[in-house]
Image (tube, rainbow, N blue to C red):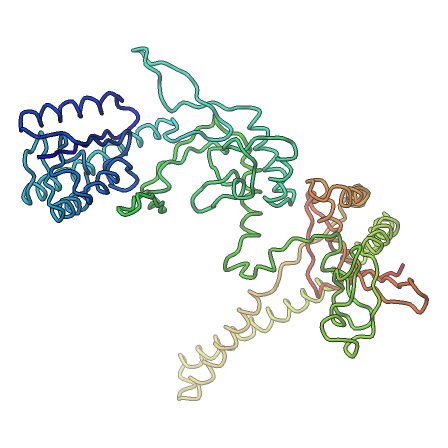
Length: 541
């Protein structure tokens, strides 16, 4: 009978000579059994958990269809596969072709051996996985890294008392740690992952895999804890076991799934911290603010402004938005463009750069004058003071009405107890008083607490410095400084209304400002909502 030999070993940790040893044993077995060896196939460093992605076994099955041999000889059934399903399928496919299976360990393989040995091999594979996980959990609990290379770190060589290297030790690579801190700082400043990746590529930094950076390398996946922005090792926490992996029997491809929280191991490793906790929290807060989800369901709400005044310019004729609709970045009325001249008579266009320059000059020259800022805030404080006085008066009235309702209810209860009043009318009056009491208590609970807003002593100076850096926005729009300056500047503006004048190339530009953005406490911008009496300042160019 013609025999085809097959050999396999699982990992690159085993001896490569294992293939030759297995084939030699199979040849000796064939010689004893009187079998003629006509072909030999093998797979080195490939798992037996699946038959997929094993070129040697695939070739054996292809050749088997050509009636090239009569029997397959291997050292043991688990060399073909440790999967019970794969072994049964392979057995049926070969039997259909008239080919039997013989092993040195089991001899002639029949249905009973397939069932018993297949089950034992599958259980053995599961047990190997359990013991491997147990060992990795122990490594993780000791604060040693149980995975592959992580950007920002390299292996640290230490030896135990037996002179053997201790696996999983890591130390910080300072050059890569500097890049990581730069990425975190740029993201907090408002840069997108795509812009950050472009900047790193321009600076010549190699990505974690040695090639070019891309947005996904930085952004990653928050739920799975991957990507630079979500790797908790950078904050000094080693998290192991966030994902579990399963392998497809048909394709051999692996698929990851989020593990249950009780399956993960978290260990503090402060010596591996690269970014501060404050910076980490700022990054996660910004990621949550811009991520799509129940709080931000619309993709358009995530778009960052491309230009300095994107989304802020409006047509002075119809009130519609001005959009980029011509050469040289010219602004045109979106209403006229979409609905025609009957909807808006403004058929003129103006360079967006011209409007941006005029607006920046106006803000720089008028709005940020210390006297203007102080006068606006004093006006706001006066309005707030009057409003607080009105609210206090309203609270006093509610408290008085509540006290009176309680007194009336108390007197009514006393009269019933003394036998002076009886009947259903008393019950109705008491229920009405209790309803008034409940309503008044609810109104008092809803009365707002109005904090006193003080003039931050450095607010004008701080915003003047930001606005004077507006040249960065036009010169290098992707830089972190430019993004910060742009966002601070845009916070000052509610809208820019552009109206064409009769003279050619002449426009009236009216800026409605958000002076509330100049209020600051502890160096942070405080947003003041509508209805506070703090109206926007409007001026024309």
